[in-house]
Amino acid sequence: MFIKSKRKDLKMRKLNIIPTLSFFILISPGIWYSAVNSDEISSKIIFLIILISVVIAILFSASIKIADQWDRAVVLRLGKYIGLRGPGLFFIIPIVESVAYWVDLRVITTSFSAEKTLTKDTVPVDVEAVLFWKVIDPVKASLEVEDYRQAISWASQTALREVIGKSLLSDMLEGRQKIDNELQGIIDHRTEQWGINVFSVEIKDVLIPDGLQNAMSMQAQAERERQARVILGESEFQIAKSFESAAKTYQNNETALHLRAMNMLYEGLKEKSTFVIVPASVLDTMALGKSSGLSSISENIKTILEELKPKIKKEE
Image (cartoon, rainbow, N blue to C red; front, side, top):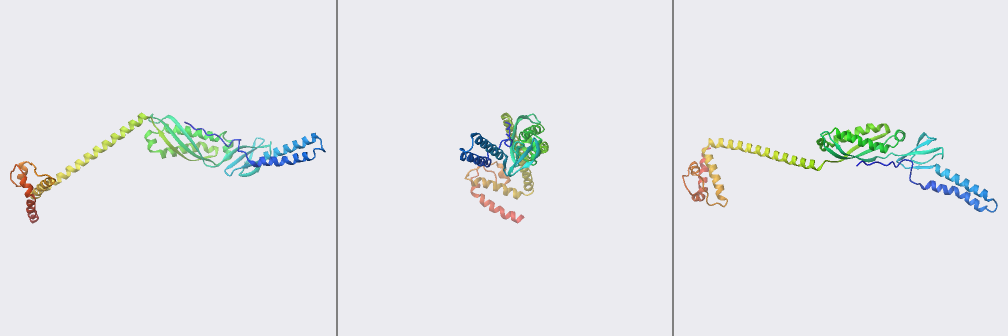
């Protein structure tokens, strides 16, 4: 939804008590004089005095203007620009001079958006953004463009559509800072001739269709599963390499191989196990002889390990 900015600084200003108070102060002497001397002067003269008092009060009160600290008044004399007034109290010549515009010099925020705009890869998106800008030349802002607030809003919206059409969806989701800078450059170039400086543009949100969101979610999940499988495969490869290196070590050291086999058997028996069945060939490699039951091993395994350790140390 494109938010139009109403121009609050045109023509109309909030009422100020000073011109109103001045009107009543100036009209009071005429009314008081007419009331005091009503028996001595005619009704026509009284009416004329009151009329003159009212006219003077209206003209004087109309000449009083007050600009806030952040405002500048663009004054025209018979339709021709004569200068800026404000801040504070200033006077104009009624009828001859007029305040055409009140220009706000503070930093202003304007929201704008682009709906159902196609990206470079033909994806419809809704983009919402905020523009931060400031009038740096009140004269240009008043005389070069009819309504600078509305003009900058339209310029921002068209620039946003232009940038979206040249960008990929992935760039908009990941590289918002780049798009913000590009938007700022385009809008600032367009509004520079109006005396307006754009400080920054920030994209608030990028909305994509629900179906595309689901597809992107499935794609991300599949990518994570792929990475997990790749990591698992690399782990298996590293483990296989480690086993290969260990096998080469045991190949040249039968005592180490026997000790390793005995240790594995011991680890298996001590975890609440009292009976283990292993192939007879395994017992042969450990030089223990063939046996169908290993209950005796569970009782004497510690003794065998203790006997092997001194022998290994002696060989080393």
